[in-house]
Image (cartoon, rainbow, N blue to C red; front, side, top):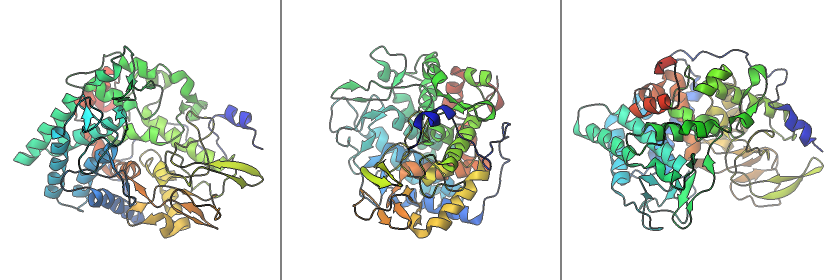
Length: 475
């Protein structure tokens, strides 16, 4: 049996052959090249957004090809993807503009209110999942502060990118500002709490759990602070960072704010360039959040190399733990032990906050780290293509997830298929996977998303109120 207590005491595991560079890596120069196979990944990933979006309302499914509701986070990533397609020559600017305008009109005009049905959102925010046709709340999902933030980021990016004087682009800019301005960020603090709640249900009120500590919620505070109206108090960043002491892992060059699933290190960075800017915590720590994510990527890879659970398939070139689908909820024998497997769940190295490891890997975990650690991400992408071929890599790039250890043909997985030699592979693409893969490649190539968002008044204001200084942000 694994000595779990010994494992937890180690922090991030580093092995020979997985050495973490000791110094902060400078941002890659504009225009670094990527292998030809990576361009194919980008184009296929882009086509997922372009071909699954509805042309009458701009809504994008949570997943495909399984029939699904709309994920507002998928829409935020889609609005970011369309300009990437324009710049790469995959679609025209007019095509991207028109679909973007349709999307923004829909979110601006759809009804909001406190009623539990028939509404797209409330107080300027939107339900996590909505109907693909009507836009109404899907079942009893929450009004989501973080998923609304992803949508707002895509909307604000559109407002920065479409800068021409023609009437359609002017309307995009007007709607982008109007949708963001309408959001009442203090609604998620109406019971007197200092932090921002994760969400709200019309049936039972605010979710008890807040966005605080270190996870994907960082950009919730940046937009909440930067709002032109209904902004949260200037000291709200202190509520976010207050639990940081319990999130530190590692020593010296491996020390970083840890959160086990890698998406928590990627989502805020998709739109915000954290290179060279620091808040009070990072100034005292002597690093920045970009470097923190680079260290998190190396820690994830090092954990997969160490492979304390002895899963099949983990290696120095095949790694990446994050939130994703899994084969399902099963307890099965594995190498003399009984192991538990899961369906959709957040996954990450044991010993870190929100830990879980059932042998399931997700391509987006590594590929979403491209700008931070290209020297380990590109070999990972190549190895996954080589080892798993068209079982994992298809029409729209990499499928959501795979588990090389789940080779049990005597059970029916919740999703996907099982090969007795290669294990389980999912059969869906997820919008929240596709978005970081595509946007981070664009950021790596040319700072594409970052350079537009550096000019966003909301981003600049939010960062400054959070205490960030230095770099492109100035004093």
